[in-house]
Image (cartoon, rainbow, N blue to C red; front, side):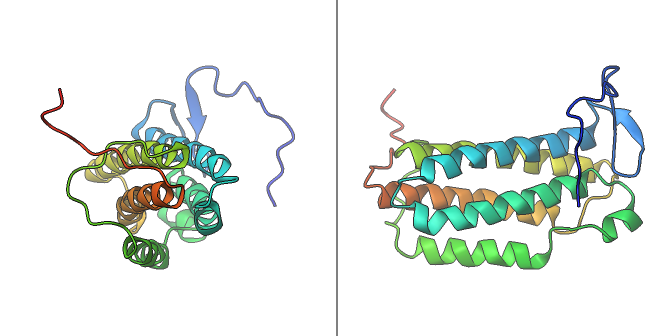
Length: 192
């Protein structure tokens, strides 16, 4: 059980933070950037969940988004744990999480109209929030790739999960626009 008695500790006032295991690093470190972007994505999904209230897309998407938010919290904890032994004992993103996203993408994509152009973010509040979350997810993915390429260890499924999640958020956005009866704005390259 996690217990948080104090919101502020003043420990970070000098620009340092502790990773899981106690290692002190700069708040600007690549690892902190990674789990910070995952946290930002989770906050954007909070906007999605709120915008799903009263939306026809809510019945389908709310439970999925709630599950993904918990998975993202696990991913953030995984990214905040540089020690492989300690990370192996903590909740982690696994192949089953990636597979679940793929199944949801395939199922929801079946009922969507064929793409004939790129989709612009929009299509109602829910869809727009999902597209915003998608772009944050892509940034988180790039940061985790950079961390991995620098020689730092990340969980084996962290990058595949973020990659698949960004695809899922795109499909969820399209699904929400359709469910909400909103037109999806499409890219018109000559309209400039």
